[in-house]
Amino acid sequence: MPGYRVTQELDPSRWDAYVDSMPAATCYHLSAWGKIIRESFGHPTHFLAALDRGGEVAGVLPLVQMKSALFGNFLVSVPFVNYGGLLCRDPGCVEPLLGAAEELRRRYDAEHVELRHLGSGIEGLPTREHKVTMVLSLSADPDQQWAKFNAKLRNQIRKAQKSGLSFRTGGLELLDGFYDVFARNMRDLGTPVYAKGFFASVLGSLPQTTRIAAVQLEGKVVAAGILSRYKETMEMPWASSIAEYKPLCPNNLLYWESIRLAISEGCAFFDFGRSTPNEGTYNFKKQWGAEPVQLYWQYLLEEGKALPELNPKNPKFQAAIAIWKRLPVRFTRLIGPAIVRNIP
Image (cartoon, rainbow, N blue to C red; front, side):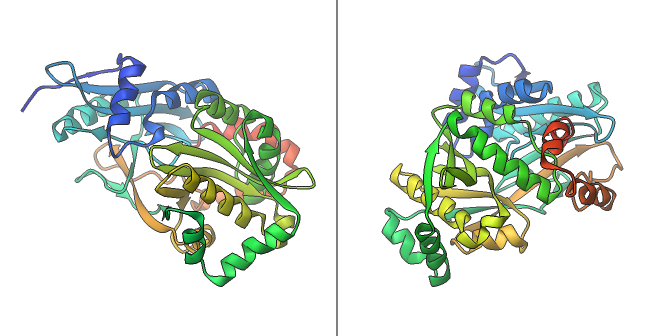
């Protein structure tokens, strides 16, 4: 078995070239996400690369350390998004990269390392399988895709089209409209909102592959999302709409036009993002024909330690969520970013 050297000093261009060469890679493995997280949240990043004896990259593991009195001290690959985790061409470098991650956990006295894997996990690691992502296989043209929808979904899209709603995409010029809708929706869900600067950093750091999709009524944004293109997949990791406009079906127009855009750009898949099986957003995404792909969130822990319970369904967070839903949106926009920066 060849030996491997694990380093944090790999040049970003070499890192990204390796990521781009890997079929299982996601955009969140790219070095740009380390920059986005450092700029937006101030968290230290540890991008581990395993090099073989010839100095060639054999595997990578992007890690982010998060530490706060309220939520604890841990490392995540990758926080704030759905995917990350180990990306290895040679299975032999899995153990060295996990060993380096465990060494970091001990060095920084972290409670655990969380690895977010898509589609398959690493055998033997403690694992949660509570989330899936919903992925739609795209047809070659929009008419073929449209024909696969049931009558109810087609009627909802037609209703949106006849209600005076319009669709457009853009960059930073649409950020204010997107953020107004997103912040309001997060408050209604009882969830602290990211700072607007986070989304500005995403758009600015990945200008060729990210954009905002927006549905407007008389010039006002009533539904919007972030679109991210990587290889053959178009993903919408963040999307929101204003509840009072729900009878006009703006969400249906948002997703249909985004799917049409993905098809026009030659994508093979549309990723609707993370959901809990059989809950509301899961069922909304399933009606489009999207199928669940299992997410494996895996952990490096101290011997005998229980899996972490840092999720909204944890009873200790329910009272805080109920209070948050009653706060003015302008207040949640002020204090939310300081809280959510420590929630992975």
